[in-house]
Image (spheres, rainbow, N blue to C red):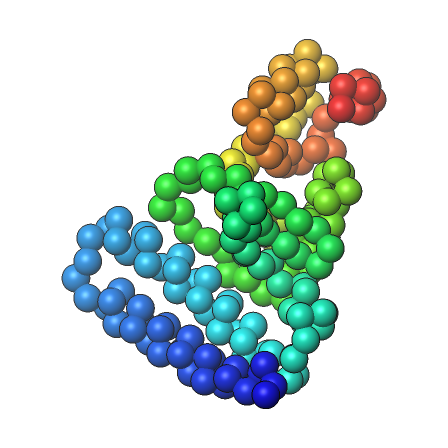
Length: 200
């Protein structure tokens, strides 16, 4: 029996869940409940699109790239924790309490950005998304942090930063295990950047 035989049925189940969640949002609910349900809908819409795509492409193997490229969550009985995998990268879930936060609408470009960043993190490197202003580079990085259960500190850089401040900043990040997203990193003086490279 093919493993994909129940995929269309699962797609219909996803669509029904989305319909039910939409009906809940249309009712009189508290602000906090709305803040919790709306991100669930956002994530479920992406899940529905993934399943729909897999049904169309008739994905039938765990080794198929269309499955491997997804950010997947697994419960590991041996280590008693959640593992997150994407392509050949694997991470332990961070369990950072982030509260009821909004989530980014995931597009194919977001998926590619996630793959690039998780691939870099797997190699113990960082990422530097580049592009025009307002295209969602910072939000994508923050949203990947939310998906991995890691706090992401966004910091707007300027030409007034010196190496001492950057040293303290990195020291704090190392102690708490958070990610940092340096907006406008190119504004930092070249002399400071050379010292930052040594600090890292």
